Image (cartoon, rainbow, N blue to C red; front, side, top):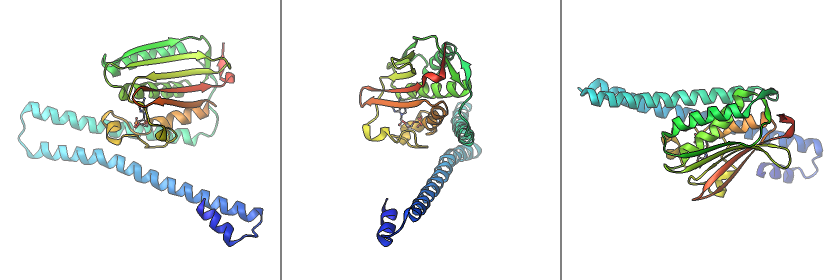
Length: 260
Ligand code: ADP
């Protein structure tokens, strides 16, 4: 990068060791900048619902409200509190995943059981507004951490539901592909994602459309969590999307993570 090439121009005879040192400093600077960004983002994400909540509290406190109106305010306050709760929960999940350098456990995880749970939750979240298919095309168990796998799968399904307009379709599938890898995929007929965003979606708090994500109850951390869980299982997350047509999110597990 630019600071590295500047140093190289300044010290053209620098040996390998000098080079390495310069590289490490820029890495540290980058890590530090990322940490500062993260703290700023978290503070902002926390402050917004608190500010809104305080506004509602003041209104309820200062105005004589009819019962109906008051109930409405309480509902809005509850939803702001819920937003903070989701954010804190996702931050904790992420912190725990990052603190754990070991690969994920290798417990037998029955994908068919997980699919049944996902289906139940999906139907509740969608309120009957989407059409679903859940297919289990292979009986292999996954070797992993059940809670983490369920969390990754359900993040992808809930994203599909949250971003796909009413009457859209969502297809969830588990199979073993020709290379012997386990494939979990979620396909939706939502708005799709323009190519320039794809590589950044798993960054913490990266969103294509800020207000849309918040309206749907998103914390901006879901895909960062999925990416971590995938990497702890040596799995790969791929995202394919055609703007205007829909998206497919896929997790591919190596055959070492499957058991018959
Ligand atoms: P969020 O809480 O904002 O949904 P995520 O990390 O889960 O956070 O997703 C990051 C961004 O990726 C979202 O804000 C949205 O712009 C985009 N995204 C995720 N899933 C989908 C999807 N199925 N269809 C369209 N866009 C999506």
